[in-house]
Structure formats: C-alpha cells, structure tokens
Image (cartoon, rainbow, N blue to C red; front, side):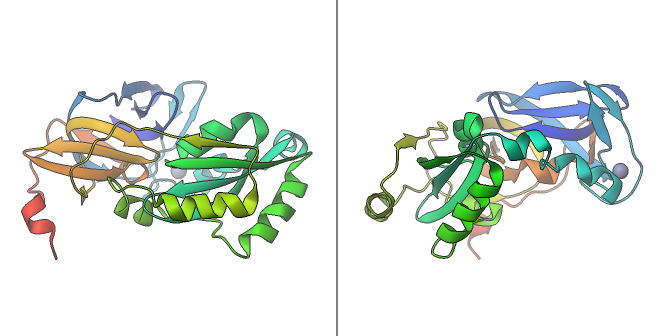
Length: 240
Ligand SMILES: [Zn+2]
C-alpha cells in the first residue's frame, strides 16, 4: 500500500492505494495509526477513486503527475472570487484569493486560525489584481514550516484586530481544530501513533509520550510497511 494523497477537509484523511481502487483512512482524533514508512516514489494519479501507480523516483509526484494540482481552469477563472485575510498563530498574516463558494473550505485547508472576507470580485483575474495590491504590505504565502512553528500557540489578538481595522472586512471567521496542545510538537515524518487532530496539512500524532507534527504532504509517495521500528526523536531531545 502506498500513500497516494490526503484530504485536509472536511474530514481529514489519508488516501491509500496499490493500483486499482483507493481507500481512505480517516484521521479523526483517537485513531491509532500503525504504519511504518518504506520506499518513497511518485504517488501516480487517482481518477474517480482508481489509482494508477508510477515508479518514477521523484516524490510526492514526478513532473508528469504534478499537473493535476493546476487549478487554473476556465471555471476557476470566470467564477466569483473572494479576497481574504488568513491568520496563523501567533502572528502570521497573509492575503489570498479563492472561489467565493470555497472561502471557508480554503481557509480550513490551509489550517488558518482566523480568517476575514475582504471583498467579492467578479472573476479570478480581478481577484489576482486586488491580491497583488494588498500583497505589497502582506505576505501572499505562509510556508508550512512556519505554520508548524505556531502550532499550539495563541493568535496575537491585538495584531489581528489592528489588521482587521485597517481592512474593514465583510465577515470574520474563527476556526477550531481541537488540538489542545501543551507545547510545540516535534517535527517528524511518521504514520504511527494516536491521532490528536489535523490542522490544515499538519497531522498531530502522540506516540510514547511525545507529540509529533507531520506534514501530510511529506507522507505522500511512501510505501507503507506493517510497523514503524525506526528510533524517533523524543520531546526531550527536541531542544536544540
Ligand atoms: Zn509519476
């Protein structure tokens, strides 16, 4: 079995397959995962629940299988778009655009702690112009590494409120992921442990008293083995 994809929303899940039909492993809190990680190679493609494997060594996807993430279809470009702000703890703020009907989904996919709908515009091209203009003062991209560093922290309310004041949003959102972390998790790539929850692309697992944060994208492409026998960094060793 290979990890061939993941879904951060609405129900976080890993997608596993070995050619033929794909299956979902839901990542609800309390789920026990007991996989080891074997070889990693391109995850191929899944179409209508059917997996076509690929043996190219590049992971998660070889160049031929990367194109499926290209969303610039005509439907995307010509439908109403929302311009939004997203906040990640403690004080990372970005501007973004998405199809109007995907606004809350998009914010959750990214694991935003807060969101604000700024404007609705007629199409994707106008949205990109507004994003560029606002993006001169704000980031247009927050990397997963930085989101991971803020897991378990609180939003800097003062900074967020100040930003909202200067943008006069149409509506604001507050997202809960139920992670309830006591401290910052250890960075690891593993698929064994008890699921604490998922925030955007980040899966939080507890194993042998240590809490780990796993980027779901880093699991894509791995062949799974029966059990994980690698030694892992424990929380005591995480202070470097
Ligand atoms: Zn491939």
